[in-house]
Length: 268
Image 1 (tube, rainbow, N blue to C red):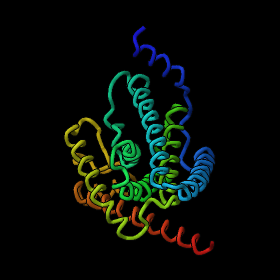
Image 2 (cartoon, one colour):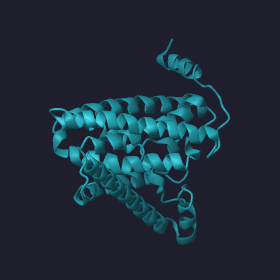
Image 3 (cartoon, rainbow, N blue to C red):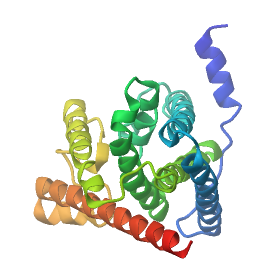
Image 4 (cartoon, one colour):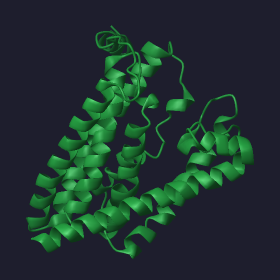
């Protein structure tokens, strides 16, 4: 039997259907509360352990590597499920893995490369600020996480719980840079990701449905509130406002974490 046939049978064995839960339903609120609490608890335990280790950066790198491999396996399953089960062997550009919430998957694999320690501070600061922002936004506005399949729905929730864990772990372990410079140093990486996302959307074309980072040049943003801004002011002004809003959100996350850890340090 061909490998693709084995894969198809495996995917069919996990295509458990469900009624997509509604936002703010008991399912959404209870699962989100449990998941965020678990992410915080694990980040606190493992973060303090990494901080006390002989080489915190190396310890953090190993943990991020495990998270990166887990995210890769989850993404491969999702892409295969969508291709074989949901879309009848057609690729859907909407699910191309280059959203803001996809970037941690790539960054968490960087510890496998030589010279990790040289750029660890920038990467972990990005994972902290933009990773937590992406996780919180998706969980707060969850229609994109709700699917008519249990595995895809749980995949979406668990993925964003992992992002919150990674961001908090980077902060608590002391590897991220909590000063203002630490946030500013993440901006070139963020802008590079935005340009890459825009290039993917443009190359895929208007009929593809590609909307990486929700900044397609062909249609208003698919995000609530920002969609209306794009409709009112135009697509490219909407794109610039959306990018600026993400920067403001990440800066707010950075400031909150800096204040929270400072208060925790003063209390001890």
